[in-house]
Image (tube, rainbow, N blue to C red; front, side, top):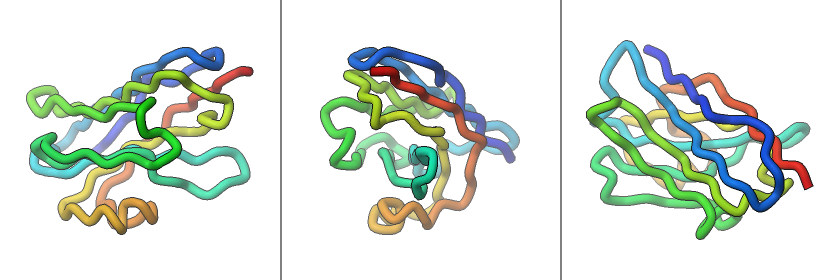
Length: 125
């Protein structure tokens, strides 16, 4: 079972990036998915989450209105579209899967059953 995030890179402030998280080893179409990030010297924090059907989405206040989470269950992939990027968005971004939708736990960066390897996003000022 593997989750692999990709799409990170270096971008100027105000720019956009689209992250992808591809799952392999099992289907994640019935799992709820989340994006998290960890900046240097800081704890991991919740970014966004989406239910298995895509009907419910939740965002951290710091990214609301700028980031959009989506998923394509046919491709076993979840996305994070990041617009209007700021230097404070610089972090390693991780995707994760959860069998149970517990947004309170997700916002605490726990309650996830599978974690993927991260992808680095660097936003220059």
